[in-house]
Length: 368
Ligand SMILES: Cc1ncc(COP(=O)(O)O)c(C=O)c1O
Image: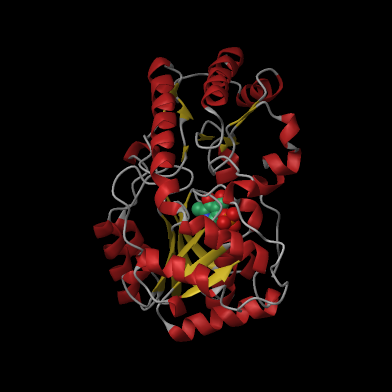
């Protein structure tokens, strides 16, 4: 395999240094939380290897939330680890897969590193970033092994309806391939929480993690859910060969955070709704930008209107150097740099407001 570093990681806030950013709108998670919030006593944990599939109490929490059994859950080093295990377990260099773009970069890069042929389904702003299921159907080939979707979607916040997801699963089933649904943002929807995709059938894999809604990406706990025991054994083998098991400390923290989700998530969704309102009010007052309003997650993907003449490099330079504001530029997602991902779940309300002002100011300065 040939690995290439992804711009989204090379240029990430943690790699460039948080202290270099005043208004951080580049994050795709909610505000990071300190360990002290969980009131855990970790001193007595015996630092043994953990259960290879994941701590039983953590898998019970994940299974209970999705309506599956504990044996259907495998914990992984973040959702990123789950995506890696799935790609390397299911795909060979001669295989073909269908992936939606834009997307979280690992969904594209690991299959590329394996050497697979990929059909990209490019979402279009003009279609409200909606997935065209007929295009998906047409993209299937005899050697298609995997269809890879993300909902709620990063970076657009667009959600597939349960009916659309079921149709995508039918397309995959008819083609005899698997459907990977990256559901890392499933706990952050503004409407009804969708059912876990893996409950549709044994050919569907759900991936998620503690990083986004729970604001604890530093513990590196994610998981895959799937009801095909043979596939789960293959994924477990991949996990054992890479790291044997997860960190017992990380998984203990994850179990506690998930156990508290009933009290943690509702106020979080309200805070995200208010932050989304702030972005909406800004977009309405700012004629240079347009967006598709996100239905889930904590990011959106506005763009500078096509008819606005702008020096795009200057826009990002001014945004950074004069306004101290970071966003996710379009090239992180293999998109035109007029697009930018704005994370509204991580900054405080005041930081978000200042960052949005920075976007307006940078556009003004970079107009031609
Ligand atoms: C859609 C999606 N999947 C997976 C990940 C990886 O997250 P983690 O490995 O921190 O769980 C991300 C992170 O941005 C993401 O947005």
